[in-house]
Image (cartoon, rainbow, N blue to C red; front, side, top):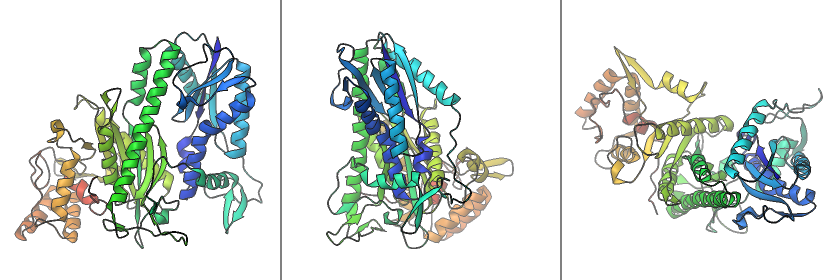
Length: 520
């Protein structure tokens, strides 16, 4: 018998995204990653008196069962949790106590939940299911941890609502904010860069325009990876085999998503010409030692199949599409994989945590489509939302309120999204294939069929008023030689299908936030 312990970092999204300072967000992401990849390992090394193994990525075999000298072995970390085998509960509790101390010292306000189970070591899948169930129960039952306030004479941070403990360059910081800022420089880049470029640590370096600018917050999540893990483990009762499988799968999925992000970086570098990517002017670094440009993208989280990055708002949709295309070309254990993306296009100073929530809700909308019974396989989908003013309520409520038009006895739906990302012949004619979005965009904005920008905006307004207004506007445009791009999958009348939906509004709404890059 031995003890199986599951450590889980809690409230990760709020901890990372609550600030509007990019450096602080980067530092918070780094601290979350270090909580289990660094501080837990440090706690094991300092609290376990006998032998231990913690470099789980360096080996596949689980030696704990056969090597009685091992007091602890880290089975895996990922997705904000870690599974560890301990020889006794006493050792497990010593490590837990030390981890708590390390987080208080290095990552103020970052919390974790832990459960310890004494197991026989006969069925890894059953033991893991039980400990995961108990973990969720404990998280649910644990009361919310109120932040320690200050005295009446202390000033509170606008970001964390904690007492300000220092002021640097006239900017006040709480202990939590300061810890995040200091950690920003330690974030590892899981990709390589040409020496002519750097990754921004400030929103102002993302290539924004003078005046009112937009950024894109992108959240990508793999489809059914957890289900695939469960399927693999359900066939493996043996601890040694099961641990080996979960380690191999975890490392492979991490490699796939980091490789996909590297290809996004490569695409941006290949697209740069004379300090510009398309019509986006890159920010030049103020550095006397060497000359380089900031790429208009910043990774925040790349953890297994969980990816979040921020970029210039005009690149967010295309880069998300390219990322999903790259994922589609990969396989896991010989089987195809897919993912979904949610994109929030917001003004540069929009509350970042709210922007992330919108991106996450868009991703959930895409996942809902991916799991629908319309398709006999789970595919890659993307959804997006443009926030030009404040948004109240959730995404679904906002869309019901602002993207449906009542006219006579009919409701007209302005949204065609989510869009399918697939290059296979089987789905090339699918009405939601993103290739149709690209085709409509190109006909609207280039070639002999190009529409003036002001007419595109007028068409967007006409569609938002319903079928009658759109019909009158299109008749006027036809008299001037302007035609709606053909939508090949479905017949449309005045821009709407027989189901009273339109694929054109999506394109028109994104017309200022979409740039096509030549794929490499």
